[in-house]
Length: 112
Image (cartoon, rainbow, N blue to C red; front, side, top):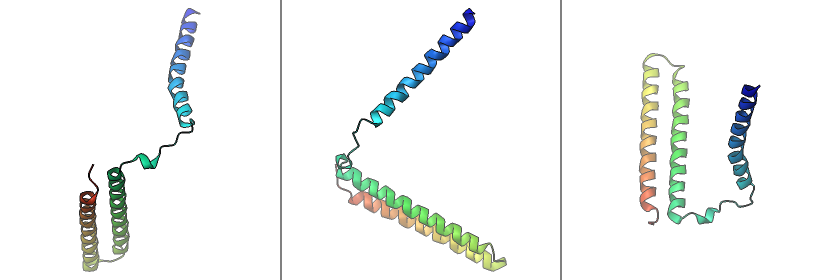
């Protein structure tokens, strides 16, 4: 009996200790305060835009590469090899252009 009561009290204590931070977090979410985008510095906004543009360019390059590889799988021999080589070169060129564009964007961002 003592063991059952002890384990029950332990379980309740653990459950309440884990539930308290979760309840407090949900209460903070519903407090009505929304993070204001205007509080971001101009540099932070510019860097976020640079990162978003870079991510979009990389995703497009990867999607284009996947489509080119899919199209190349239907070919045979030298045609397939040439198509794969072109797809890989196009992907590498797109990634290089995206990196350069991001670097230029970061340089152009306003200083702190």
